[in-house]
Length: 135
Image (cartoon, rainbow, N blue to C red; front, side):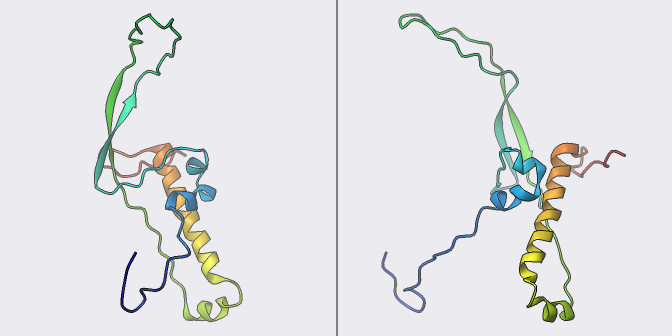
């Protein structure tokens, strides 16, 4: 790598973790091991298997038979989940002693994690809005 100019001698030594990794401790769905896709565009279609594959062992010269597995496309629509924390000047001044940045980060991740859990476990209506939580 060859670069010139201000800052060209600095290399990144710390890389922020993926958002999915940061959310795992705060989301039951994420911590269960589900696949979290970070979409780079509005919609994405991925394969969905309606029936599982049925592995079988055949002698070397036998032709493998179709196991009847059904595959279709599942279209996913991206949703933006965000969190906003309003912090007073007084809390900023007091927060230098109590690691305010860490507290705010944990609160925001917990909020986003709960929202992701609601979308995954309760679902959305036809307009893409979160359904009402069951009572």
